[in-house]
Amino acid sequence: MTTDYPSHIAGARTAVPGAGDRSDNVNPATGAVLGTIHHATTADVDAAVAAAQAAQPAWAALTGAARGRILKRTADILRRDTAALARLEVLDTGKPISEALAVDVSSAADCLEFFGGLAAAVQGEHIPLGSSAFAYTRREPLGVCAGIGAWNYPLQIAAWKAAPALAMGNAMIFKPSDMTPATALALAEAFAEAGLPAGLYSVVQGDGRIGAALATHPDIAKVSVTGSVPTGHKVMAGAAETLKHVTMELGGKSALIVFEDADLENAVAAALMANFYTQGEVCTNGTRVFVAEALHDRFLARLVERTAKLVVGDPLDPATHVGALISAAHMDKVLGFIETGTREGAELAIGGKRRTDGALAAGNFVEPTVFARCRDGMTIVGEEIFGPVLSLLTFREEAEVVARANATPFGLAAGLMTRDLARAHRVAAALEAGVVWVNDYNLTPIEMPFGGVKRSGIGRENGLAALDAYSERKSVYVSLGDVDCPYPT
Image (cartoon, rainbow, N blue to C red):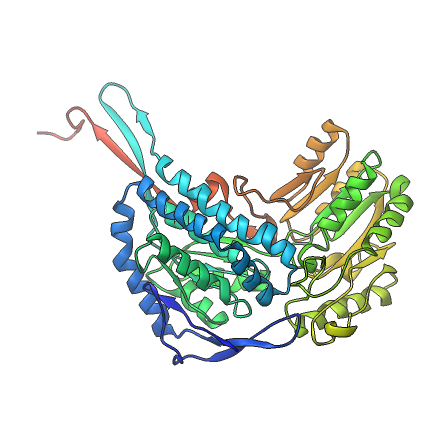
């Protein structure tokens, strides 16, 4: 049985079939059609904006505590429905069920709970100006905000955008990827069950045309996008027409640096987490692994040994470590990068092939792949692959490896493994990245601001920084005396 995936506007799923385009939602692991995505139209976008405008002022007028209670109730609903939501996420994305259960749903719930708790703590400032005046600031919502999501973490991204926006008193219109439509709708229904007034969180399904309609809409005050650098360029250009606030979390080509004093087992574990989690489809992945020459041979041997143990298989099987890539087209792109790496002289240490054995034949499965003896100028070292492909490089000196790690137009994340605390802080400061992990990789607690520099993005999500991104500071000057006017009376 297939499912319809409509938009969700003003508190209810829109009637289907709609007037917009349609596309198939395909299971990446089997090639089976899960259902039909009913794309929104520009009229649907206008309806979502109108509903948001109608509902947002009363929402903003509530106390932060009242808004926070609804967000926390929504978090409870997500936790209650973890198993069902995780299954939806796996069917849409192809990621292993073990990951969806442990990370995707729980991180979305954590986000709602975190910002629900912060909603009552939003405060302005008092600024004394002597005996005759003072000033104060107000933290005010922007109004109607839009979020554009990616396909690798659909539920988490929807929560990361909706929770701080709603906590600050805004409305959120969210467009999920047109390849992963399901859990954004589930979040809308969880919000409704928790008591969120209709219109404050709407979902508009569709492709880049709907994203463009959100970015250029004159009544939307902010747009937050998670996606590729080309998508970010288009959204920013559209947002510039009305000088919207923008937050952009875009691509990366992050470096993981393993110094000679690092614990070998932890370093290998970090490299695995930095390359093969969610079958490599993670924007922060440390796909350039720089290993000190003295440690290289032992590191490579252990890395290959542990990579060989990873289970590529049915994403719904709890024993699976590596699932299916999002689409056949993306799989072909990843396999093309692997072919290019071999042609340019990288040493294929393990993996490198599509898996088609048994039930995997109809899916988009690529083996975890390790290339050794890579050089900085290689295509696989310079370009974002977004698949399970690790490039291993060596270095001798700290200054050298920092310079090489920074020699990229991206700057989303980086990691380093060392027992030397002074070196850890020195290198963390020198790396041009929005997030740096020391002796670990790919952990994104909701309390920590997240975002990139250079072409990897603008602004920050999560943490207290996200509340700033969804609010304006208004300054109010209060005079306690007469107006000091130099003009004649």
